[in-house]
Amino acid sequence: MTESLDVKFTKAFNDLSELEESLAPDIMLKLYAYYKQAVIGNIFSYSGEVDVRDAFKFNAWTQLNGMTQENAKKQYIKLVKNILNNQLN
Image: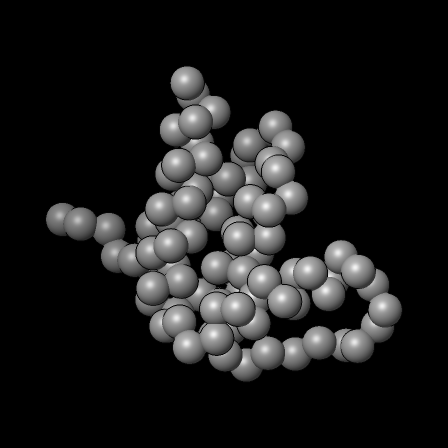
């Protein structure tokens, strides 16, 4: 029996959460964007506060506009697998 996409997505999130090493900022932005797109989709919201970090995160997310939530989950899982495989090598 294969795991459902949602189960794989949750497992990838949990596995990544256990990672003790820091990730590069560009990787963190990709993870954030895929996660937000996977969970929320194209319903973008931004508080408008002047915070450069949040602006970068929002920008990364909006660049995925139009990506399906299913595809975002797949991309998130793929990225997490790559990160974890590189950590083992």
